[in-house]
Length: 247
Length: 51
Image (cartoon, rainbow over the protein chains, first blue to last red):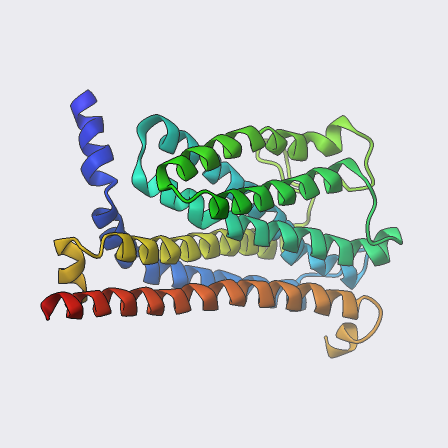
């Protein structure tokens, strides 16, 4: 068992095998993203019925919820990568962690901005110090801190360890964001989607939303793969396999 | 649809969607540009090594 794990961590999760496997998967991820994104965009804007209270204004849900979902899902992935980096020192986990931070920050920014744009006509204000909004803003600051940490530590090993530790510390914010609408009385509505109970949204509105969430996650996968492949190509340029790949 | 876009909540919808599209395409463009840069860098190194 120990030997098998050693082989997986050294060979199966090596940069070379990641480069080859991701190269094969990338066209499918890109195609999946484009199909789902276009479906979600067209169905959400043109075919989903208008909400009985918010009218057409609710259509912002198709960019706001996927952005917020991606912001949290990316941080969750980063937490797993941080554990893999700290405990088993798996190289591609630290690469994934580094490649994910700015994407996570981007999606958190989108969630905050689109939420604000949605909040103005519905709540009458761009911003309120509500538990959900504030905890997502803290997530954005955590992403900012991680990006800063990556750029100020020159030594790669120290940097990976520091970023992993800070990621683990910041993970405490994930349950706070998720349960903020339950624990505190907030202006922000409760969860629209739930794994364990029936969804509160009509199926005609739900399908484009699920498609957009999947599209955003595929987009994350696509960009992270591209970034990791670029880093691997440069860091491993003195190895034989890179020479073979480029020749 | 066009009527919806330029009346009532239309501007909010337009700005939210365009912001999302701009941020996502920026990420994509930067990733593709850095791929090009990385390939160039490695090819330059390999050609120098041959000399």
